[in-house]
Length: 198
Image (cartoon, rainbow, N blue to C red; front, side, top):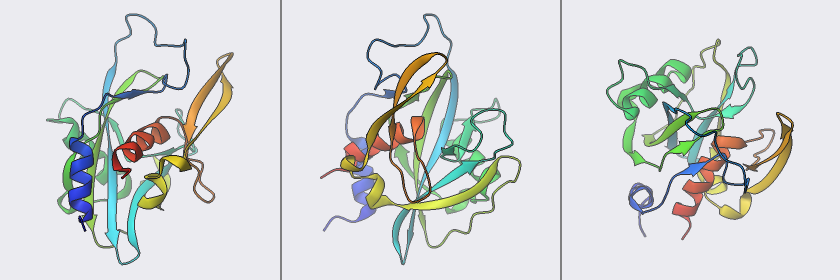
């Protein structure tokens, strides 16, 4: 049986194109000439006695942008970040107290372009043993864990829609318990699920 680390690396090395918030919306696309801003997120796969889980955050309800939404730890690539990987690790340590030395970076998923103008690099990291998140109150209301098996089954995803800026927009969603995982986060997870599917 192939161990999880090997499975993850194989999934990350598989060929494939990037994704976008516009994927579920045929006929809609980004404005011409738009300049994308680089960003990075960490997809933390945590291995514990309870099995493999992915840590996600619920953004602070006090934030101006995307308050209360479920997201990976991450943010903009700053001038001081050498690479997207460094940005993802830095943000994860700032947002949830995940020390960079604990993260075994395995690679990246294809980039994802958001409707808000970010070009996001999802960095996948493996963490052995329990993680006790320390949410930064100004940015994160809580951190929680979702079984890897749940978000790597394509059949658990669905496409839903809502009106945004006067138009009906469709998006991926993969709810878990009380958490509504949707939008860019769900789309990146959907791409991850496609790669992990046997």
